[in-house]
Image (cartoon, rainbow, N blue to C red; front, side, top):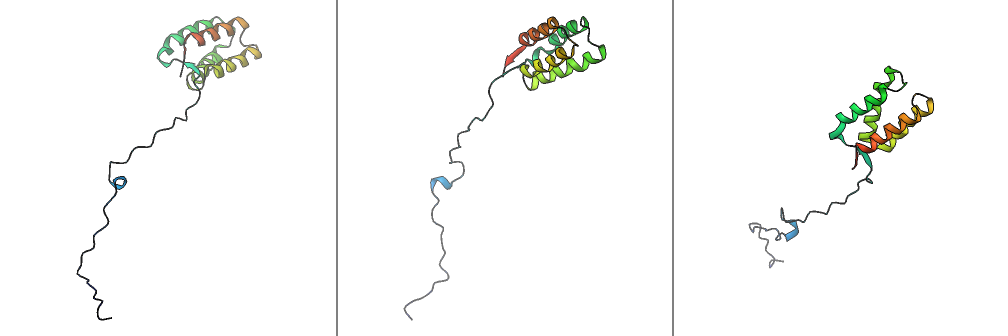
Length: 119
């Protein structure tokens, strides 16, 4: 047992780092797109002309003027954030309730198609 000497003064060195442990040498993981399907939405860059055309249609309609501003705001919000299909469904509820005629609904639908884009 006298043969074994402990050397406490000996410096220990860490094992050399591999290439994957060095900073900046890791390859970034590829990003996986988990986006939703493209759908038709109102073009936010053309909202002013859309509002102008919608106000022309709504001013000629028989809808109560107090309802028209809320209706227009909801159509714009749904059309630009969700989809034009949702905005069209919302406008259809006003058609079913009798606030809009079929011709006015068709004009509104054409305007939504005209001022929309896929994103």
